[in-house]
Length: 292
Image (cartoon, rainbow, N blue to C red; front, side):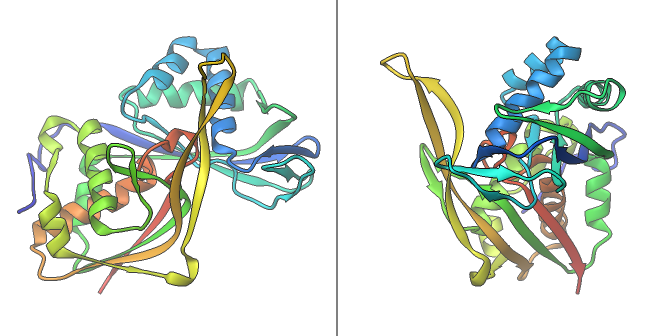
C-alpha cells in the first residue's frame, strides 16, 4: 500500500530546475564523460561568489545538485577518451536543485553566470552562457500534479548514463521498475518535509508497475565520475556503469494512491536525477506523463 503523509499540509520544500545554453569560445577537447568536469567547474564558479554554498553542495550527502553534463554536437578528438566542443555550436546544460537552501544555490548561480557574466572554465577552454532560465516547484505541488492525472503512462528518456547501485557496489544495468522508482523514492524522502514523505515498498512497485523498454534505444556505458588519490599518490579514476535509452512505465491493478505516488516520483526525477553520481552528469532524465 502506498501512502503520502499529510498531502494537504502547508509545509513544502522547493525544488528547482535550471536550463542554460552555452557556447564555447574556442574549439577544445572535453572528456567523453564530461559531467565530472562540468560539475567541478560549476563548484569553482560558485566558490567565487559564495564559498559556503559551494562547500555545502559538495559536502551534501543527498546529491543536492543534479547536473546533466553537456548536451549537443561534438567533434572527434586526437586525445583518447575525449570529444571536441565546436565554436559556433550551442550546448545545453540542465541543473536540478533539491538542496535545502535551493534559493541560495540558485541566487549564487545567477550572481556568477548572469550578473557577473562569468564563464564556465574547463581544463582546455571556456563556455559562455547565452541563455539562463529556471522553474521551481515543490514536493506538495508535484503530488497535486500527479493526483490530477487519471490512469497515467510514464515515458522516461534516460539521457545520460543512469547508474543505480542496489546492493553494495552492484549496479543495475537495466531500467527495472524496482530499481528506478526505489532510487527516486530515496531521493524524494531525503528532501521532502516529513509530512510529505511517500510510503511505498519495492514489493508494491513490483506488483503494480510494468516497464516497457525501447530496445532499439538501449545502451550501456562506463563513465568517469571522480578521481581519488591512489596508494601511489597519483590520481585514480573512479568509474560507474549505467544505461541510457527510453522506457515506458504503465500500471496494472494499481490503487489510486500507488499511481499518484509513483507518478509524483517520476515527475520529481527531472529535478533530482536517477541513481548515483547525478551531480557528475549521470541519471539525467526527461519524463512525459500522459493520460490514458
